[in-house]
Amino acid sequence: MQSRKAINWGRLSLNAYAAAVLVFLMVPSLLIIPISLGSEPFIQFPPRSFSLRWYRELITDPAWMASFVFSLKIAVATTVMATVIGTLASLALVKGSLRFASALQVLTLAPLVVPHIVIAVALYLVFAPVGLTGSFLGFLIAHSMLSVPYVVITVTSSLQKLDPSLEFAALSCGASRFKAFVLIVLPNIAPGVAAGAIFAFLASFDEATVSFFLSGVEGKTITRKLFEDIDYNLTPVIASVSSVILLISVLLMFFVERMRRPAPQD
Image 1 (cartoon, rainbow, N blue to C red):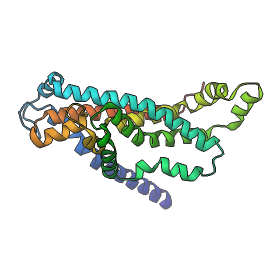
Image 2 (image 1 turned 135 degrees about the horizontal axis):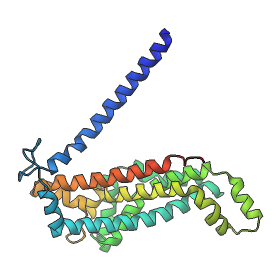
Image 3 (image 1 turned 90 degrees about the vertical axis):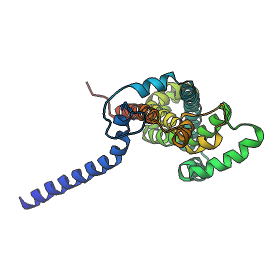
Image 4 (image 1 turned 90 degrees about the horizontal axis):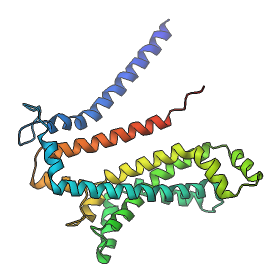
C-alpha cells in the first residue's frame, strides 16, 4: 500500500510539474489574444473594453495584407519544394546504398543546429550581389533549405517503420520501382510526408531572422513587417497579427497530432 501511494504521489507530482511548465510556456503567447481585442489605441493588458477594431484594421491595411499574402505564397511554394526534396533525400538515405549516408544526413539536418543568424548573414552575402534579396526566388531557396530537415526527419521515421517485404512483394509481382513506390511505399508513409509538409509550412511562415535579412522594400514577409512596426508603429495591430499567426500554428499542429493517432480498428 505504501509503495502504491508513493507511485501515485510521484505520478501526481510529475503531472503537476508538466502542467506548470506548459502554463509557463503558453501564457506569454496567449496574452496577446486579449491584447489584440482591446479597443484602446495602444497595447494594454488587461484591456478596458473589447473590440475587433484591430483585426478590421489588419484586413483593410494594404501593407499588412501584402506582407501576409507574400508570406503565404512563399510558405506554400516552400512546402511543395521542401516536401519533394526531403522525401527524395529520405529515400536515398534509408533505401539507398550511399557510402557516406551518415555524413549526408548530418549535413541535411545542419540547418536545425546552425544558428539562424549565421545562416541569415551568409545568405545575405550570397544573395545580395546577384539581386535575390527581397525576391520570391531568394526566399524560396532560403526557406526550403531551412524546411527540408523537418521533412527528412518525419519521412525517414516513417520509412524505417515500413515493412520492406511489402515493397519486395510488389517488385516480385512485376511492378516497377516507381509503381511500387506510388502504390505501396507512398500510401504507407503518407502521414510522415504530410506531417513534414506541415512543419515545412510553419518553418517558412513563422521564420523571422532570415526573412529580416532577405526582405526588401517590396518583397517583405509578415515577420519583417512585425519587426518594423514594433520599432516605429507600436499598436495593437501587432497583437492581432501575432494572434492570427498563433492560431494558424496551433491548428496545423493539432492536425499533425490527429494524423499521428492510429486509425480505429473495425
